[in-house]
Length: 169
Image 1 (cartoon, rainbow, N blue to C red):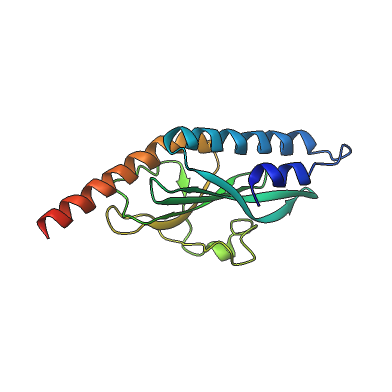
Image 2 (cartoon, rainbow, N blue to C red):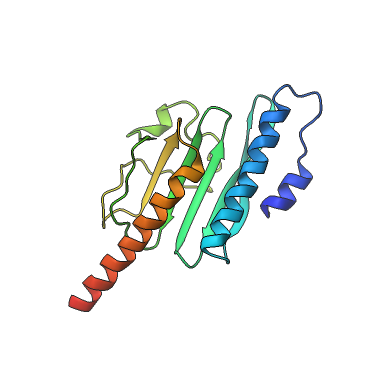
């Protein structure tokens, strides 16, 4: 379901204590979508699952960027953002300062929350330049919009690396 449709169909009840925080999260997801569309106008935002935090139903959103051959799936539980990134091309150098990777995220409470329906695979390793193109991470101090420039730089570097390898192959 499109993000905008899901948000219209799932308003937060007025009596919910965390209503303001949930509405802020929803507005932020819309902002992320708009920013991604500036880079890739074909970007779609689809709710692929949901989870509950503070008794509020929250979306798990997949942003699909066909020009970048990239899918970024995220959820927020009011404490941190959880992401799974899947790229069809290897990533270049990826500055992951401020990211938290966990070798066993299934045992880290809340990391995979929202990914329970196995719609979204969760990968556990730290990214390695020009090798891995799928990984999961959490953000505690950084906002998602702060990581996007790093991500686009890594995707472009990975595409350039792949093109150079194909030319010399």
